[in-house]
Length: 273
Image (cartoon, rainbow, N blue to C red; front, side):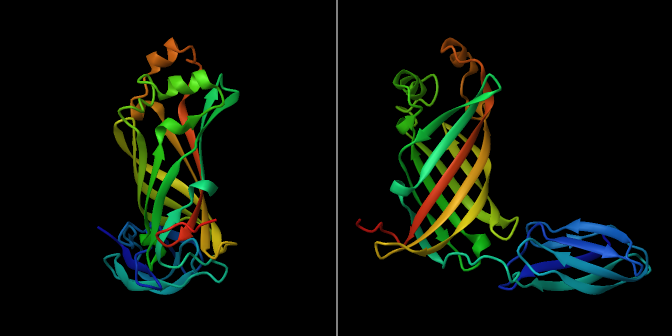
C-alpha cells in the first residue's frame, strides 16, 4: 500500500526519473523519502494522517514545495508537479542531428597493471552521431569504434590485442554503443544508458557524461562537446583470462576504464577544414 504519490515532470511535460519526494511534518521532521521511477512517479510508504509538507527536488531543477493532506488511511496524492529548470542550469545543444568529429574525438581504455600502474590504449577511429531531442533527456546516440585501430604504443602488444586471443578484429571489426536517453545527475552531468557491443557480446552500459557546452567553430559550423566515462568488466565481453596468461600479462586487472572525449558538429556532415 502506498502513502503519498506524485507525478513529477519537467517544464516540457517529460517525466523526471530519480527526482526525490521528501515529506516532513509541521515540525520539520522527515517522515518519508521516495525516488521517482522511469515514468516520473514517486510514492511513499503510508504516512501519519494530517497535514504535512512535501518537497520535490531533482538535479538541474528548481525545488517545489506543496502542502500534503494525508487521509486516515495514510494516503494522499499531489497529482502532477512540473519542475522548472534551475536558473544556473546549462543550455543544452539545439535539437537535431549532431555528428561526431573523429579528428577532435578520442577513446581511451585503461587497465590496471600490478595494481599500481595503468596501461592505456587509444582507439584512433570513432564515428557516429547524437540525435538531440526537444526534451534533452530523450536524446539518443550511436557510436562506432574500429577495433583494429587500438594503439598502446607497442606494436607487438597491439598486434596481440587485435588477435583472436583478445579483440579478434577480423571477426568483430566494430565496437558499437547505442545510447537510449539521458538521466540528469547535476547541472552539467548526466548518465546515458545504452548497450555496448564488443567482441561478439552485447551488454547494458551506463556512461557518466559531463557536458562541455556548445558554440561556433572557426570553420563556419556549430560544435558541442561531451566527456564520458564507464567501467567495463573484462569477463562480460568474453576476453579470455587464460589467453592473457599465455601473453604474459596476467597481472592486468579484471576491469577496464573507458574515457571518451567527443566533439560533435551540428548537422549530418562534417565541414571541410
